[in-house]
View: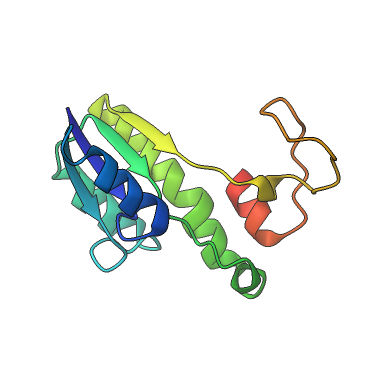
Length: 130
């Protein structure tokens, strides 16, 4: 099985590569190799790459910067995953994408579940929910 990890130099992506490098054929793209704000380049790079599973461990995670750069936040956190899903559909590959607790307002006193209603209070949370 061939796995591609986007965001392979980040905390989560690097941990995934370390965990699976001896178990699967795994490759990664870091920010320098794949600019998540350029959808055409993402498509071009991934169209020429064979994989069975695509793990998107990358995001625009600077919560404060998202507030001042909402267009960039939505491009990277919403539009890019949509394009990744389209590419995976075309390749009949699986997509693993990570969300965040920022899609909730933080008012619940118990742990959130997938069934809880989302109510983001920041641009970052809104962009991840989109």
